[in-house]
Image (cartoon, rainbow, N blue to C red; front, side, top):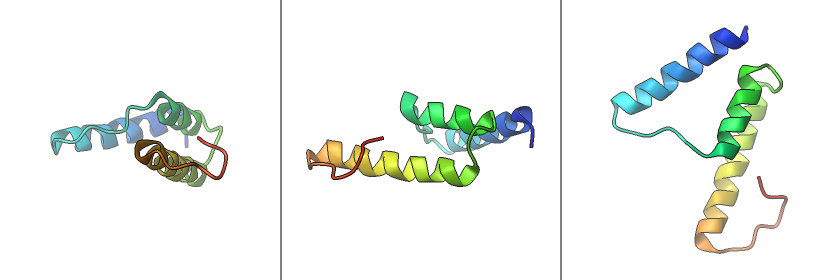
Length: 72
């Protein structure tokens, strides 16, 4: 898949979220991972893993609980 095709997919997902009244994740850390996927530097599975880790650490930060592994 080309970077252009991946960008189209990402833009379409963001647009769908916006049409439904939701804002897609805007974190620069997460968006950098999206860019890595678009450019083909990581797989979609790696992007999913990074997002899961991002959510986990974000949740811990919000609740002020210590994070036991490397933070995203």
